[in-house]
Length: 306
Image 1 (cartoon, helix red, strand yellow):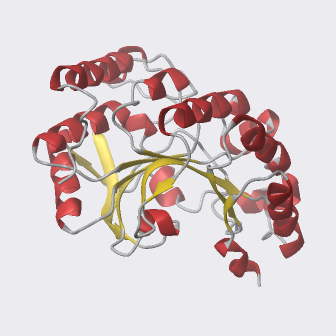
Image 2 (cartoon, rainbow, N blue to C red; image 1 turned 135 degrees about the horizontal axis):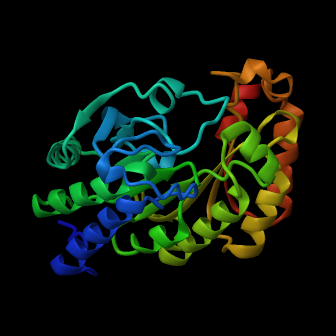
Image 3 (cartoon, one colour; image 1 turned 90 degrees about the horizontal axis):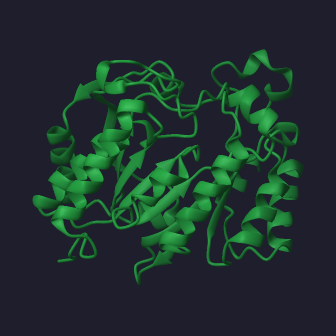
């Protein structure tokens, strides 16, 4: 059995949980840094209250191959989101907040249930706004024998200082890098200074875990996996994102260049977003990444365009 959290003592783990809860008094958990008191029920940009809210959980086989593996990824989908993407494909969860409120103890039990179902990992989907509660649940689950990797599956708008606190807790970081253009990030996702926040957070993630590490069964157990969704008309600024990865991170980073964009939620109100991407748009980004020396690229998404 793998020993979880061998680099962190029980006392240190509790101290991290306490530090994260303290942040909620003047919330700076994410890039918005709203500085409102969520412990008194105030709500910021994410609109989430103090109480945990999840949409669903279970074994998921639709993630990248190193994450889903052969048994599935133990995904937990959290309601709300700290980004407000006008094209969100899961807007019922992220924007309409479908789901139920649960306690930290119940979340810990879900994690153990997923482990007992032979999930390869605990995959925290859109966790940022509930991070203190989640880390407390991980602590409680660790006391019950949780011993599989933890995946931090985020939209990339994370406070780098908060990410530093997760150094001995998170095994796999799986951030989106959505935009390199701040004006577009604000227009389409209501995120100010997205580029600076995102790149700083990703640098910290890579510093902690390095590139993606895969075992003999082709399942990831540690490292960084970056997702980038190609948008129509280069609204994402894809080449600048690839330049950042090539120039600031190692060539062992796993990059999923995604072709799955489709006009959802409010995208039809924006003519520049109201279509699927073309094969040519996708191949231009893919070929650019290859030309920049990025080796571990997930190309399966291209089948969506053929």
